[in-house]
Amino acid sequence: MMPVWRKSASIWTKRIMIPGLLLLPLTWSSTLSATGQERDMSRIGKERFQPAAGVIHEKKTMRFETLFGYSVSQQSKPFEGSHVTNVLNTAAIDTGNPHVRLEIVSPAGRATGRDTLLNIAKQNDKAGHRVVAGFNLDFFYPAGMSMGFQITSGEVMTTPDNSTITHMAIMPDGTVKMGGPVAIRSVLTAEDGSTIVLNGVNRVREEKHTDHAFIVSDRYGASTLSKGAGVEVVISPTASDGKVRPGEDIMGVVEAVYENQNNKIPAGKFVLTASGTKAKWVKDHMRAGKKVSFRTDFDQGVNEAVYAMGSANNQDGKVLLQGGEVPEQILDMSDLKNVDHQPRTIVAIKEKNLHVFVFDGRQRGYSDGVSLIEAARYLQSLGMEEAINVDGVGSSTYAVRNPGDTQLTVTNRPSDGADRPIGNALLVISDES
Image 1 (cartoon, rainbow, N blue to C red):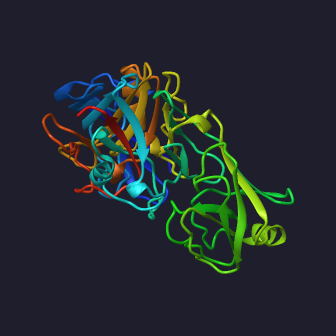
Image 2 (cartoon, rainbow, N blue to C red):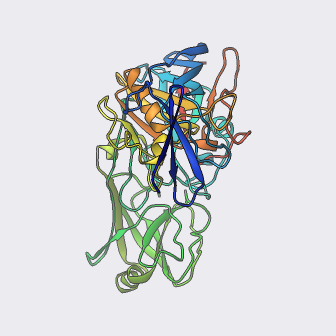
């Protein structure tokens, strides 16, 4: 279909046919460059305070002059106009402050399960370890596990098959690294020296997984929840505490081999669950009493991280800034993901400090949401050096401890109308009273 153009005042409107959708108007201001850089980011109002030493919270309402007044969400309709309004909560965390640290955690310390941000914060709050702020983090499956990878206190909680799109790592000295893809390799070795490549840690083996093998620990749950034909092997660790750590060989002995599904995961032990050709390999090389070992490695220095996450299997998990520059793929306006206005949670680095941005959206008259192009350009204008987009829409939640309070308060307006149970969270911890 040929595009139809019409001119009205200073606004150009282009109508295009999107496959599978209705004819939608996309609007932008003729005063803007094709890259989408905002010229008008005027503050309508703001509030700012320090919930703890080394942490600054700020909330502000901003008006963006924008390229596209557009949203693909079912809750929001396409809207015309050259401006969008955004309510933005931000936190700046001084990673060099000795009284503050960052942690990536899951509900109740499990790889699966979902809970609200406030409940996750309460589970981790105690004397000398006060949670002063918290934010939603990675995209997650309905069962609650991260779609990418997660490392908590040096323990691998979950991994995808072999790589991620983005990553953020908190190093032993408290500094934060972030950027693009991380390669992941998990290998299991039998006593006879034969090996197979694992497809992930703490993942569900489903019927669609025809030639797969996963290692699950008791962090995963009571049983494997596996489906379809396959083999499951209980492994008892011989020289570890039953935790998977990056770059560390886990030694064990085969305790039992089952040819049925959804077996129990004994406390402190592992289960190898396999299908197809990998199930055949298991039957050929693993017997009760035989020794076995496995390990998981990450590149980009993530093996040394204390806490880390990496987004995978979601098209919104994108790098927004790299070395202070906006990647070309973010500026590609033919990709509707880049021009879609949504609630978003974004993490960024500036001068080694971590900044978290939570944009509200899907609430016309209050906050429209931000596109990836607008967010990237805005962060660039603030001097941010690295930035990635993490989970957003109804999951975007920002909580902070207000002055004089003993618990966190959600200061943004999640677009679901209530706090959505999430799969993991980034917490800001203070050792002060």
